[in-house]
Each structure stands twice: as structure tokens, then as C-alpha cells.
Length: 557
Image (tube, rainbow, N blue to C red; front, side):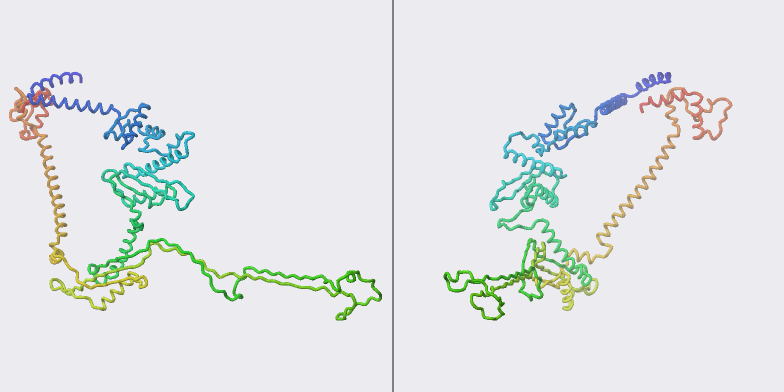
């Protein structure tokens, strides 16, 4: 191997000297390009890979992040004009966690971490302002988490609480969002943002939240007009259109099997009630029969009393003296007998009886809440095309009969839910539909001239042509590969002859230099004979073959 390597360098040098100047310059440029590519690959493989740590960083947050990276001795790079910070790939997640523990990046605003640095002895006003700033910052960060929002600012107007009801004011909020280029917020996202903010602040109504983009376009719906009347929001308008479309679809769906799919049109104008009403009523019925009423309470009171004997006789000393001694025999006076002397009358008695009965009062309490989005009135217009009689160019249009119009009217009433109490209106008109010139021409054309069929045929023809061309190219490539393989296996006598003086390729004169005893058959005069002769020569004298190859390399042609 060492001898082969030593002998190859002089051979390469002699081959390089035999090249022309143009080939020498091309070879030098090629070697230099290969060396430069290898050097770039070496530098690229040895340098650490940098990945994005944070993207779309504001100037204030970028300065804080770079200062923190310098303190942690973390190498970094800037990209996208300073909007992105890159660090080595193996330190991305670790660096993010360390910066997150320091509250970086802050996203252009401050959150509740502002309250962590609260100083002792600050006034109540400063505390309220810091709390409001913290809430605004947290809401801005939450809104920035939406994919299409690049940055956001939130302003809250929170009034001071008061004990007077007339002076009580509701809080309001305004939001400014900066969207990424080419991005927009749909109605659902704006509604979600409004409800998110209103749910984060006490007593904040969604109607008092205003959302504006960086171009000054109002994204949230107006709260009301100049007269103070509230307008319909996006959800109410969508519901109104859904109701109208559903009623029109029901009318057309029931009439299409009768008049045809393209011969009926229906339009609905609905008046909906979106007001929220609540009503409480309490009613009393006249007094009914006490026997049928339920006793609520009953109270009875009965009392008996005896009055003492009243004073009798002539006023004076005589009447005030005690009675004399009783004389025998004692006789009990009979009832009804006349009292004699100073015999007192019996005491007087009295009795009192009271009874109070309370019956239940027949009362009805009814609490009614109005349905939001109920239908106040419907106005429906239906147009039915004339009947087509005949086929082709002889076809004519005739109006429908009155009986058919009446049936269509009845079906449309049932489909729309007609109510006379609401004041609904229905108008069915039978009129010929006007056909445009393009539609008439398209209807008159035969089927094989249809534009759709022609386009389909052209598309199929393109695919068939592509398949045919690909098949032909594949067959031609296969044939060329076979020819190249066959030609590569054949020797080149002219090229071998040019290898140098004294060199002779197998052929007509080679039989004279064949070793003795070798017989040349008729088969060796052709391609197989030449190939076999070259193989024998390579085995017997490899130096000759090496000189031939050297002659090929040193040719200028």
C-alpha cells in the first residue's frame, strides 16, 4: 500500500502537468471550493446551535431580559431587528424557568406582582391605584394570550362607592388591541373578550366595554344611539336572520314538490321582541260560603261573674248598726216568700261568652317572565312561477288556476304559523320568472356543448396525455440506460491506440503477439474475442494497461 501510494503521487503530478491550462484552473477552483465548503461545515458543526428564547419582545422587556442574561453569564444573540432573543439550544428551557422566577418578560405591563413591592405606610388612594393597575395588567396579559393579538392595553374606569343611590355609577372599560399583520378578530372572539373583561370587574356590564384595534376601528357593538335606545347586538341580529331563514325554508320546502325547486321564492320579515319583562300579580276572589272555607284560626272566650250585695235601708246610724241576735226557732225562708225585716236579697250573677273565627283568604300570586326573542309579527311574501306547458322551443308559460293558488296560500299559512291575533300578513303572487339571455342560451344548447362537460373532458384529456408522455419517457429512459450499459462494457480501440507509442490494442494485429500455442478461433474476431484479449493482456502485463489508462487521463480532448 505504501509503494502504491508513493507511486501514485508522481503519476498524479505527471497527469496534472499534461492537462491544459483551462483544466488546471478549473481543477484549482474546484479544490478551493471543496476546501471552503469543508471549512464552513467544520465551523458550523463546532459552533453551538442557537434557538429562540423569546420572540416579539418589547424594547423595555428586551432590556430587562438581556440584563438578566448578562448576570447569569448566558450567551445570547439578537434576531429580527431585536425582536427575538436567541440562546444556545441546550440552555433554552433552563433559562426560561430562571427568567420566569424573576417575572420576565412582563409583557409590557405589570400585574399583581406590583402589590408584592408595596411599601409600608402608603395611603389608601395609592393602594387603590396600584390594585387597579394590577388588574389592568393582568387583563392585558390574558388578552395577549389570544393567537391573533400582538399586544393589548386595558383602561378601567372604576367610580368611587357612594351611599347615595342616585349618585351611584357603574364601572366601564376600554381595550386597545394590536393585531398581527393580516390577522382579524371575528365577532365571537370580540364577544368573548368583552365577557372576559366584564366578568373580571365587579358590576361591570358587557355594554360598558369598548374594544378598539390599532387602526381605531370599533370592534365591539355600540351600546346605544343618541336617543338612548339600545340597538340589536350581533347575537340578536344572527338570531333574527336564523328565524327568517328557517320560516322561508319551511315555506319553500313544502311548495317545491308542487311547483318545482326553481319555481318558488319566499321572503320573510320578522319582528321579534328582545325586551326582558317580569311581572308579579296578586288577586283576591270574593268571599265564598263559610262552610267551604278553611278555618285559619279560632278563639273562644267565656266568663261568669257574681256581684256583691248592695247597701239597703235609710242612710244613717240605724242602718249602719249590726243586726240583732237571732231568735229561735230558725226558719229557712221558702223561695218566693216575702222577706221581712232586714233580710238581704241574694247576690246578682252575670256571664259573658265570645268566639272569634278567622277564615283563609282566597288569594292568587302570579309571577310572569316574558320570553326573550318572541315573535311579534310576521310578514311573508311568496312568488310562484307560471306553469311550463310543452317541451323544447314549443314550451309555453301559463298561470296557475285559482284553486291551486288557494292551496298554495293555505300551505304557506300553515308552514309559517300564521296568527291573526299577531297581525301576520301573507301575500302569494303568481308571476312568470324572467330568464336571462345567458340562462336561455345555456338551456338551448345540447348536452355535449355544456361548459361543465367540456371542462371535465379537457381535464380527463390532460391526465391521459400526462400518463402517455410519462410512459413514453420511461420507455425511452430505459432504452437509453440499456445502451449506456452496453457501450460502457465495450472497449475503445481508438482511445487505447492513443495511449502512447508502442501500445497495441487487441484486434487484427493482436494475434501475432499472442502467446505460442494459442489458437485464434473465428469467435475471437468479434466483440467477445476483443474483450477476452483485453482481459488476457491485463492478466499477463498489467503495466501496459496502466500506461493505456494514463494515456486516457492525459488526453486534452
